[in-house]
Image 1: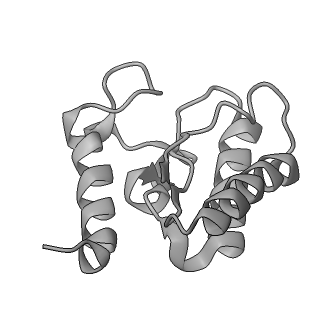
Image 2: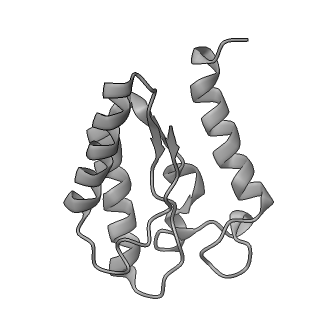
Length: 121
C-alpha cells in the first residue's frame, strides 16, 4: 500500500497528531495482513498564509519521525526554501498547489528508488 496525500488536512484544521494516528491505523491493518506499507511526506504548497506552509513542513517532519523507513520522502525535493517554503516554481503546474509533470516525476523516481530493492524482478 502506498499512500500519497499531499495534505489538505492542515488547511481544514485537522491536527497533525490526528493525521499521524490515522496513518498508524492504516499501517496496523496492513501489518496485520502482511502487506507492505509506505507513505509520502506532505508536498509543499504556495499558500498565501505562511502558517499553513509551516504546518505542511511540520507534518512532513512528523511523518518522517513516525514512519522512518516506510517514508517516500518528497518534501525536501519539492520545497522552495528560498521562497518561504512554497512549491518550487519548476514543479508548479501554475496554481501553487498542483504539480506539473516534472513534479510528478520527482515523486515517481523517489518511490521507484526506495521500493525497487523490495520488488521481485
